[in-house]
Structures are given as C-alpha cells and as structure tokens.
Image (cartoon, rainbow, N blue to C red; front, top):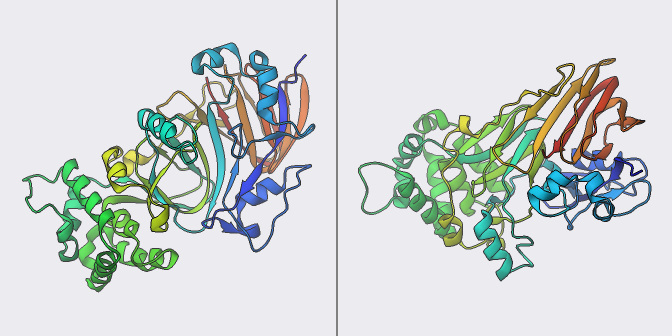
Length: 407
C-alpha cells in the first residue's frame, strides 16, 4: 500500500527584496519544519519558500529525503490520480505554492500567456524555463501592499492632465482615453530616460497634494520607492499613475491573470500559481535585468481595470463539514486554495478532492487524521496529500491551514 500522506521539507530562496532574517515569515515557516537543515541567518534576506515539484526549488520527503517528484513518478495513479494525469497529460503537480515575505517592491512584471511562454521557452530556455502560463493568486497572511492591474481609465486620464505627465500622452489625442491610449502611455513611460523619469518625479513632488485627488498617496510613495531603487526607475511612474494601489488585510486575496501587470510592495503572503516560473520584468530592477519594453507592452491585458476587479473573494467550501473552511477559486483549471481556521478545541472535516493537495500550517497546533493515520500539526508543517483522501483536523491551539489542490 502506498502512503497517501507525505510530510515534506522545503527550501527558501534569498532575493534582495525579501525580509531580513527572522523577520521573514517564509524563513520562519521553513525553519520550523521538523528535521530540516535550514537555519536562519540574521543578515540574509529571505524571500520565498516554495512547495511542490517545480525543479528550481523542489520539496523533499521529510522521512527519506527523496525528491517528491520521484515518489510521484513511481506511484502516479495512487497519488496524482488518473483524472489529473489525463487532464494535464503529465504526473507533475500542476500548481506551485509559495510563501513570500516582502520588504520592498518586487519587479514590475507580468507573466506571459501560454502561446508567448512556449515561444520564449523555445528561444531562451535558460531564462524562460517552461512553456506554461502563470496566472496566480496572492493571499495575505499579514498587512499586504500591492500594485495590481490598471486603474479605471477615467482615473488615469484625470492624473495624466497633471502638467508633469502630459509629455507621456500621444501627440495626436483621441476623443476618448481608451486602452490603446493607456498602452501608449505605459510604453512611453517605460522607454523614458533616467533624466526624464527623475525630472517627472521631482515635478510631481512639487505639486500640492490635493491635485492628486483620491490618489493622494502618490507623493508619499515616490520617496519610498525612490529609496528602494532610484528616482530614475521607470516603474515608479507606471505603478503610481496607471495601476491600482491596494492595501489588504490578512485573508484578503487578489487574482493576477496571465499577462496581468503587477508588483507586490510589502507584506507576508501565500502565492499560488500555475506550474511556471516565467516572468517579464520592466521596472523596480536594474536596467540590465529588464525585458524588452516592446514585448512587455505588446502582451499587456487590461483586466483587471479597477481595484475591486483585482479582488478574489472567498466562499464557503461545500465539502467543509463544520463550516470552518473557505475556498479561493480563481478562474482557471490548475488549482484552488482552501483556508481552514480553527479556534482552540474546534474540529473540521474536509471532504476528499479528485486531485493531489499540498497543505501548509501557518499558525497554531493540532492533529490531522487522514488515510487511516494521525499526524501532528504545527506551524511550518507541510504535507502532500494524495487524491481522494478526506482529512480531519482538531486544533489544540488556534490552527490556520492553507490547502492547495486541483480537481
């Protein structure tokens, strides 16, 4: 008989935008996995803990040290299930969950759609390491700031009337400020020289705050972003003028479609995406690390186009026996995310799903019964659960669990 519940150990990477040492929740969760050799260095920025089978930072079986993908390949039908194998035509987990701890803005970016991803992968497999798209969700574990999608057109048009921004408008203007006008604005901003961007930011800071209307945060964020990168970074103008600025609380979530422009700014989050690591960067990073502005703007989509449209709201999960589990269900086939929250002494049963799951304990202590065995749960514990397995939770100390799964 194949064990359908497998405890995992994972690793954490160290990008400069990560939170320092023990301030990084990603690092703290990674270090609390029993039997792990991961130790936190106080002077290192820890950015992401990855879970799953993506080869860049795969998970390993805690008991044996085996690569999880090797175990899945040997027991594919028992663990992944015929339905998921048939659906995706492979024996890999079709999603990639992460915990991110963000101290400063991530690169201004988008993830190419499937067609472009396949093309880029064939041309440059070292940079674009797979042919897949990468729609994703970000679920806040703490206060979370992000730039996500574009503001409503009328809001952008109003800001573009400010004198420092008018040079980015088309010479010949349409009667209506539409998405094509916005694309021209974004492209012109991204191609502007260091000198032009610095001059624009300086001029914006000289304006009275009330001229920014409901976007009065703009003059407050210019110095903050300039200190993180430089006043010459093109991403500052693009993000502040054209994009939605969101301040989210724990439990809030946003959805980023393929080709959706975004940049996370601060906080601890769970991020889950289709199985891919492809990205096009064009701001909040050195010029040498940026991709082609023409390519970036050619594949921009204009969804979402308001702050409300960015949000992915949870709903009760129909297979939750005691009503303690909510589902975040983005409009894609690769994954959903469950959030189970139990107070001291509370219990929950979550019905079986057709595909493989990965679950992460982000807070508290308790037990899990699954596949005929009982497992200890503590903060930082991570499990793979094979398809068709019901799980029962009991909290001894307030328990928060996130489960990633495919149907």
